[in-house]
Amino acid sequence: MPKRTVYSATIDYIQIMDEHGVVDEKLAATGPRLKDEEMVKLYDFMITCRQLDEIAFKLQRSGRMGTYPQNKGQEAAAIGAAFAAIVGTDYLVPCYRENAALFMHGLPMEKILLHWMGDERGNQIPDGVRMTPLCIPIGTQMLHATGIAWAKKLQGEKSVAFTFFGDGATSEGDFHEAMNFASVYQTPTIFVCQNNQWAISVPRESQMNSETVAQKAIAYGMPTVQVDGNDLMATYRVCKEAADKARAGGGPSFIEMVTYRLADHTTADDARRYRDPAEVEAWVGKDPMIRLRKYLSAKGLWDDAKQAASEEKAKATVAQVVKNAEGIEKPSINDIFDYTFADLPADLVQQRDTLRTSSLGQNPSQAGLGR
Figure 1 (cartoon, rainbow, N blue to C red):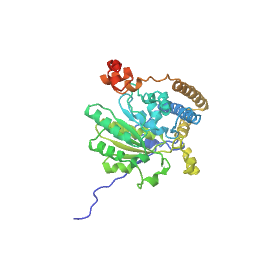
Figure 2 (spheres, rainbow, N blue to C red):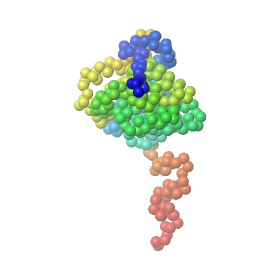
Figure 3 (spheres, rainbow, N blue to C red):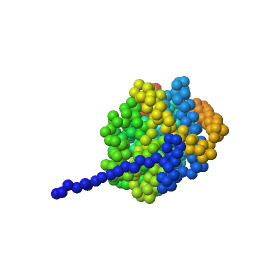
């Protein structure tokens, strides 16, 4: 039998706005594009999210909150995807660096602070808000997203599930199971990999031998693309295209967003011990907020006065968020019962009302038997 090629593939890299805020107008015209007024709104929102991120860091350092993973530098990845998703229709299934996306889809900001303060009420998603709580175990949320998407497909809903994870998560078995299931059953799942170059202290090139993360999707017959994750225009475009395709029955997509974790992995980490300062400095210049402001300023849509006003508004907003989180009322003991089941079984109602799990608690009428 003669030798022949049975499969070949290429992966596109998409960048519309470079680090100087210059847009490739020809490329921008070939797909979904953010309007200028939308970019102004999103930049203003990004300022508030960055302010919350900085204040959360200070809360941890002052002992007012537990370990916290900063989102700094990765905002364009989360916001681009969230803006492409339909609020109230699509699902967001995050890991722990997508604060901006969650806020855009209805999660009160104080919920994030409560989560990292160790208050379980931070994981209580409001009714009607389609998202799951933050996921700390690496990679498990991708299975959840695939299951949600499959369920919505079976129910005939035009919903899409966006799930977020880092480059390190693609080395987990859960990732491969989720990808395979999503591809086989053509679930409307968008896999958003925020390749921030580091799996805690392990660089991407040391924990995988593939040239890109995106190419891992090829093994599952899944459409895949690599995008500049700090370019808001590009992250929105690829997510919008993938979501439209999934909503129309076209199945899942994989998106590798090339970005960088500007801060430590968490406040329990010291990245100075394993990262070259020159590498960090180079990525600081690619900050999604810097390039977006350059673009808006060049178009006459933003100036120093608007920047100052936005920053003051952000400070006031975040101050109130902190006040809400730290001033929350003491939780009730009944919470461990009332937020476990939609309809509490009778035996648990009795446990809740007596606060006993012994035979006495199960049958209070036995109280006089020993007398």
